[in-house]
Length: 462
Image 1 (cartoon, rainbow, N blue to C red):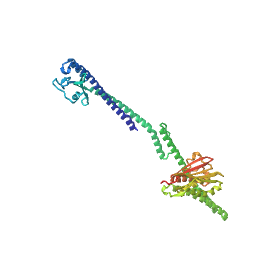
Image 2: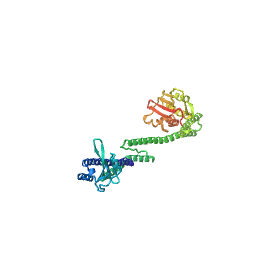
Image 3: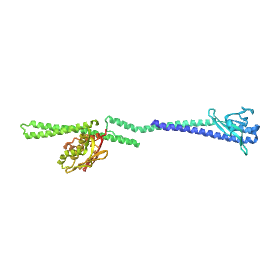
Image 4: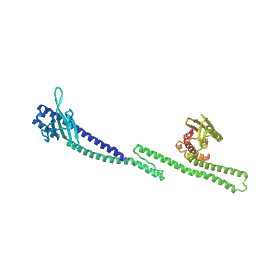
């Protein structure tokens, strides 16, 4: 950023100064040539009536020619139509000398010429002397006038010095401003970087509060949201470790208590043995379910290369799932409603997609109200098929709807344990949907019910 400020500030300043000085010099040279031309025209008008070009003996004209030459710190040479030198203010040529040059020859064709000798700091103007008659204009001579440009060079040099001083002062100001502004702009970013470094070290209890630029504040807000999200995930993870430890330990503890009770009793009736064994079997089944869910989630963490994709009739798949779950719903007097709007064939992993849909419908049954309902609908367009699972259950609080897909998160922990839930169902469902390159959304109002919308491509995308 410092380099950008310098480039944007100093380089345009240098270019502007260079162009301005060049334009000034060109304008000054053009004005000097115009002044010289006006002086030559005035001298020509004085020479013609006096016959100066033929007599070359008019003191008043000689004085005027020398005066003009002194004013412009140069030299004036006057030649007649025979190219004979009539007057030379430097006195280098006498009257018997001739001046032959390309510019003088061109002047007898009625053309004037302007030459800027930058090496020697001179301007050379060659101007024809014309005599106008009633019939035509006749060139009767030429004047070659030199003028020094040292005065203009001196002015340009002074301007360049001032421009350099001004440029240096402005460049120093730009550098100081760039340093200040860059430091002010990057300081908040440095704080964010430091916070990220501390976050990587495990300190997730710090938030960043940066005021100033809108974009920096947005970064700060996004970073704080990320920290809050990570805190929730970390809290969920720790809670999962505690819950899973408890869940895995509880059935084992129950089995041990039941077994010890049987061992401590002598001549235990067969009916009591049977009752205890039934309880032990239920605890073993509970333990097995927790372990199976954990294994399912681990398997889903593998790459999409483990997908067994085939073309499946989704309508028939849903009917089979509902047929299997209707007895569970019937126990709670839950009405199962199925709506299919069109036949749907899709490329999916049948086992995984069945697991995901079963989890959604089972949850709709488990967390419903007595005499409630569960509605499952299937629809499709040219690219996706859509499954909607709605229920009239207890709903999900708005503040935890973003967490329900996290592994092992359970909204109502007590009710989940009673219903045999492990908090892995929705995490498994989301993983399956994502492996199919699909999306899942939840809409819920606490106390009124929940709707899950699933969208999956009809053709599997590798």
